[in-house]
Amino acid sequence: MKRYKTVTVPKTKQERFAGLRCDMCKVTCEGEDWSSERFKEEEVKIYYRSSETYPEGGEAKMHSVHLCPKCFMNKLVPWLENQGAVVAFEEWDW
Ligand SMILES: [Zn+2]
Image 1 (cartoon, rainbow, N blue to C red):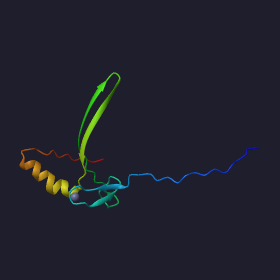
Image 2: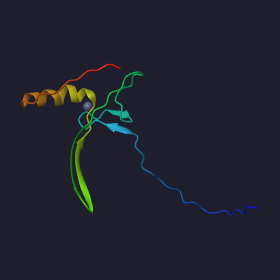
Image 3: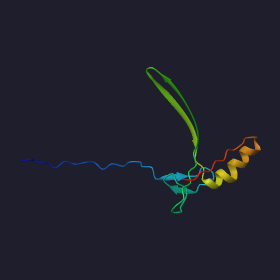
Image 4: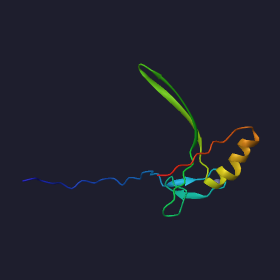
């Protein structure tokens, strides 16, 4: 027969990822999908990551910003193009 005893389990609070907030206009979304339409996904990822790897371990550093699709397309892309950057565009079907 298994015996059981009553123990007190302290309440805990955890931070869980809930969504993103645009760092420019402050609009929010659930998860990492900015779209609210059923069959549409919109994802924006902007980061710079560098790392060093040695035989005994390594380290990485990352700079990132979260922008909504409107700020990406209407603010960041025009700014980049004004700086001389060519913003790549790709399109595909499946
Ligand atoms: Zn925004």
